[in-house]
Image 1 (cartoon, rainbow, N blue to C red):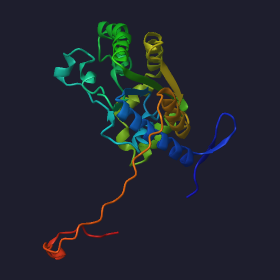
Image 2 (cartoon, rainbow, N blue to C red):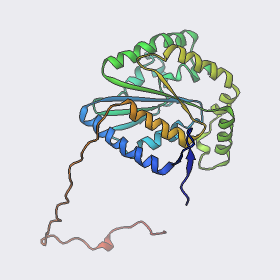
Image 3 (tube, one colour):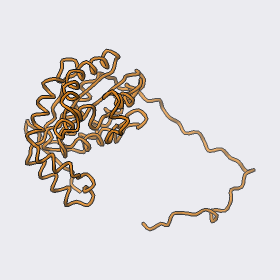
Image 4 (tube, helix red, strand yellow):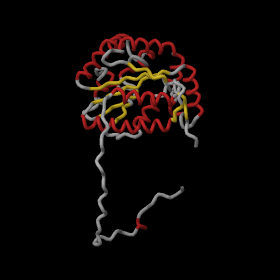
Length: 266
């Protein structure tokens, strides 16, 4: 299989797989730095449906330890959660020292889908816009690193991806009735995003926009930017030497025929 290539904005040709491998190595160094230095890192991924957030998150987590790098993708709030302080269910998933949490959508649901679809009141929406910057600044003061990424995709590219999901049995699960509504409310979502940026794109916790019309470029650019935003040093891993297998002649293992094996169909 031929390796995929693309050209950067400077007309330089890159091999996607080779660049990704290099970034993966740096992510491992970053992970070890976060662990040993006791850093707390939150990375938020927002954007329109089919903008490529999930694919980028998968490429970030692929080489990492899931005990250190965790993904949070919350579903619809329960009736009990709806009565809580809005940020409460997200706070429960914030990182402890030595952890990095990736939010596949986050508390910004209130400024996006909840606002556009009428799932919150105007009072709740306006209160979110007032309190969100203070909430994030409070996290920063508690030594939490926050990075916020908005994946920007054109309406033409989104339509292309939606059609691909509908036609591909492996992607159909990604498509929901809400996606159809989001297409019909494209302008409303655009205004909601602009209002969200106007209130929450702060100096302490700015928004970073990722051009996501090209998925592979978006993944590489986002990972590269994350690495540039968290100062880290390359960690030297200790040399590992396998110990010899112990010899135990006193123990006789039962015959292998007593085990039930999975049929070898391949």
